[in-house]
Length: 87
Image 1: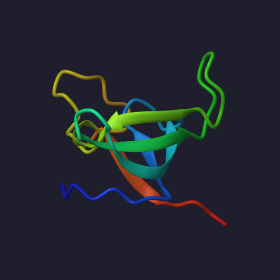
Image 2: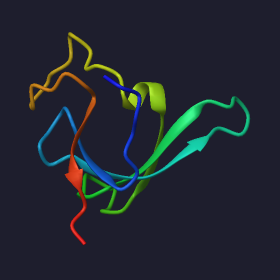
Image 3: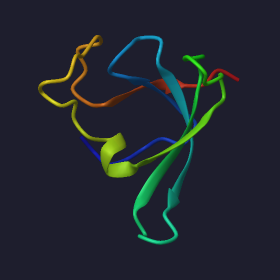
Image 4: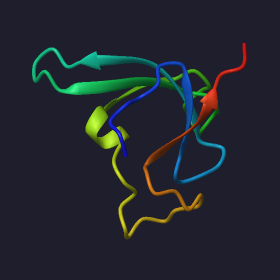
């Protein structure tokens, strides 16, 4: 998979069809210079509300699903691009 992340794109996490996120930016970690993906949840999960902002290293965001992980969506990658947010 290409390391490209689409800002404004909607992504589904491999663990559930309901785990949707919108990528809002790419960033550089100020201390390590590691590339990061900044994204927000589009669903409520436990104590975290819709719109909770998350950061994850880009290398992990675009990584493949671990072979031993439960994969409800049969995805190859941890986050799968599913389209653009409707305007």
